[in-house]
Image 1 (cartoon, rainbow, N blue to C red):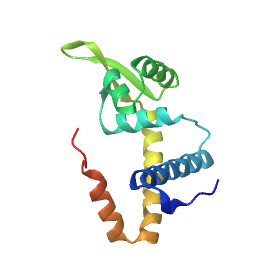
Image 2: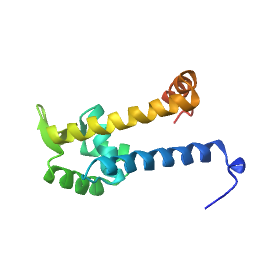
Image 3: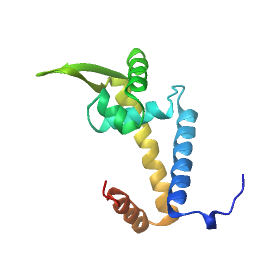
Length: 143
C-alpha cells in the first residue's frame, strides 16, 4: 500500500518506523532460527532479559491482560524459555526469569538488533544514531 508519508504526523512516522524495524528483526530471526515467538512473547522475553518481573508487572509493560499474560507465561514455561518462582518474603507474586534456553534466544536476538543498529549507523551516521538513542531514552510527556 502506497501513501504519502509527507502527510503523517511525527507520532505516525515513529510508529511506522517502529513497525518496520520490528518486522525486519522478526524476519531476520526467522531466517536464522526455527524457534518462533509471537510479538507479545518477544516483548516479554526482552523485558525479562532486562530484569526479573512479576506476572502483573509483565502484563502491564507488555500491554495485555493478566489472564493473557498467564497464558503466555505458561506457554513459554512449558517450552523451557522462562521459569517462575516465589521469592523470599513474597508468597503472593511469582517472579519470571529466563532459563538458559531463553537467555540464549535473547542473546541471539540482541545480536541481531545490534547488527541492525550498525546498519542504521552506516545510513544515518554514528552521531545521528547517538542523538536518536538519547532522544528516545527521555520521557517526553509526563504521565
